[in-house]
Length: 443
Image (cartoon, one colour):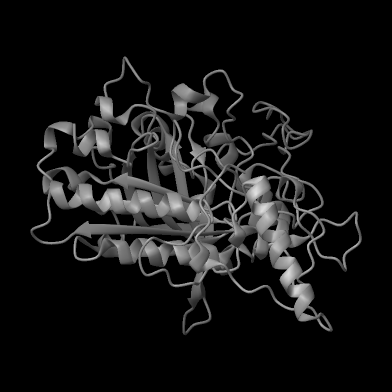
């Protein structure tokens, strides 16, 4: 972990082990202080991973465990030590893997607020994001919700909606790629829960750390902006499976098998706006476009299908994500393969067939969704589904191309409903000493 400042006001008291003396507690704090200095680890994250016994096994590399655990076990609290850097070529929250807890929130600038107020707000937000992602307290009025916890791989990402540019007098800097998404036949969109001037995505491997960030961002908005809508999501916790594997959604299907990978030769050109030669304005260099859709899953209808029927809808085996044409999860799908009766093994309207890049002119997007569950209505129907978030260099060539094809005959469309939508321009990462969006707001 990189060096970071240690806010003494945030230093928690270490929980005292059963039967431990005051001298033991003092010795522990001395060892924690020495380790933090030697290893560059914040006292908050180190103490947060010390465990309920309060006994530190070792601080080398930030690895701290429970004294009562076997040496070969990995303590769950090791999740808290994960840290993502705020400054970089790209904003955090795009290239990282799925996170256990997430919040997405859109803001509208307050009446009378313009470019000056927006710049001040992004400056505050960026500083808060930098501090919280480093495991530090918020600069002003920290709520202590994340006290005792490490950074927990917290990421905070900022974007601008179509309406932001008129509100700030920056219409000439609005990217063509930010033109509103077209209407789709499956849309049943709630306008109150769609779009917005500003968008913030928060992710972490700990629910309290994620909420703490959400609350800090909301408080930072002050009188400059008000919440337009906010949604909460979750994924499987890291370490919940025997080995890393593709996540499952609330339909029980593996979701994200064919995600583009950074190792792909064309990954950057598909996901990020280039530094030169782009139709987008210069301030979007190394940025990306986020499409956000709240997709309700009609789980009662879906769960009435047999496993075979569900697999035909998706085009993949439910057990391991392999294509119905055979092989493993990563095996190329044989689109023309037929059974003994001459029928296509992968149905013509199967979701996985329609969404393949080679069936859409190479269109690809980096999916980074969260599942959501917002309760059960009076009829016993769960309000649950997917907070679909995808990233691409050009939404017309990414999301729109694929969604238009799905709109014409996807077998899955019978079991889902698109209820909210947004498109946001997410600029590149902030360099040291910069805030996100500075090149737009001060250019």
